[in-house]
Image 1 (tube, rainbow, N blue to C red):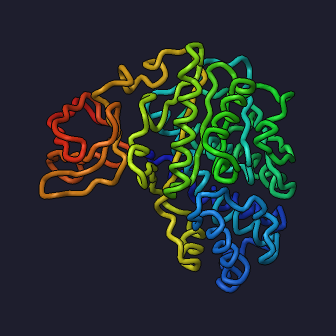
Image 2: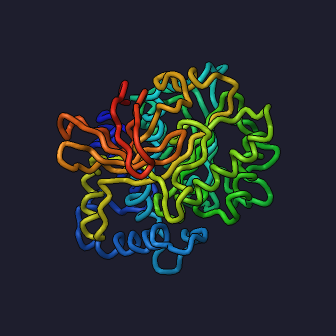
Length: 414
């Protein structure tokens, strides 16, 4: 995945000022100056960041996360919301925005909607998904109409209201005054359906770290998602799921992908196609080996206040790992969906799914394609010319076993 510099620029001074001003207006900060106070950050924000980090990122049992973290009893509820809004929402925004720019880079564009669009974000919190897409659409347009309404589904009323306000602020900041957001205070129960049956159909379905909090096996989650998309996703609509990069949680998403494909493979009329990160419906190369998993990672220039919070809390979020899945409901041909790939799926197309290391003049990395996952080496003229995690190799000639493959030739690189 190659994130454009223009996306990082979206999270600059104007963004930080709008973010902190929103926190003040919502009563989470007494004044903007509090963010300059080391004492305030150390006592009122950083402890909650550490608590939330443990809840979100330190699980090792594979079970869903703490669904009641907004009402966690470790301290002041207002400061807990502030810690999430300042410390976790912006990185999640950037993750979702990165997926959007990747779709743009590979040529995806929506077909024309009549008048306006409808979008839904599940487990929206303070609307990281909706606002991440707003940040990306202006510099990597997928041709969403200038008029549209977001439905923000959230179980905590106070956080839902914060999401409504923040979405409105971001839509204006990113020059999208025709976009609106409406919160829906609702606790989602997988067994009762992810959305109310009377809910409308949406052109865009987004969730950020949502499945991580849902109970159920991968097959049960796949059933809930597929049935919801059949009922509530418009033709030529798109679903974007962003999840943690931790081993167990990432593998859970890969198992959900596998279960989705099993459901759809038995129905020739199924309109669903997985677009990213896998470039086809082949079996997952990471699931072939127990303990393996697959995730993306993007880099950004953190807002200055976030660098300070990372320093105080011992975190380092200049690199943002995550797992993701993009599904289209469409009858369009694959080449029309991602035209930059040419004919796909193709046995000569591979995506890098690991960092790149160097052995002499060779670059070494893992790729995944129609024939599974491979450890590869490739000669490169310089380190700067080597492909990186997320790069796509087109018309690649590979020789050797999966555990030791030589790339002899690459037609082009994306």
